[in-house]
Image (tube, rainbow, N blue to C red; front, side):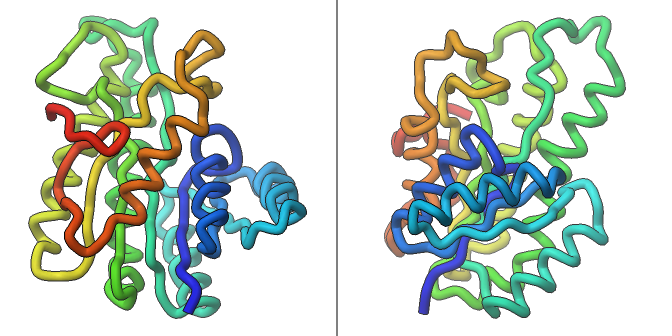
Length: 232
């Protein structure tokens, strides 16, 4: 039975490359996001390359949108093998923590942290139907408490919260076959990372796909870059 993967916020950049790499490993990979026209074009472009890819509308901040996505996946596939919480927003370099833009802070928390939590909880029943469910939270070294640098307070705080969510979910699911890990893809040349970033989207996505395809003896509740553990 073919494995199924959902990647949130994935019609471009790192998310789209993650979809492509998973589809290249014979997953049915689902692109998702809030811009259906862009998402469908992205899905069509990968499908023309022979990859098994579809597009699904999904707003991670909306309970009803997440519920509709869950119902669609259940109706079409009956299970979910991999959830990649990739949707992210606001690398807020211009907003110091002493004078934050509260709208930016709220949006970063709603999408980067609460959105990942909402989707994971909603899809948990489908992941439990997989023989080897995997949740991958796409985090960032910017969220590490061990290596704090000034700047990006909304983004960093939301990713630190995502890291705690990773630990909490992994502990709660310890007795199941589901593994939950956070992955930092590194500084990647995306719309958020900018053209000066040293890593390609292909390089960044490899670490995500590694966590999505862990064997049964693989780790859970960790924070990784390129398959290597990094400090929280």
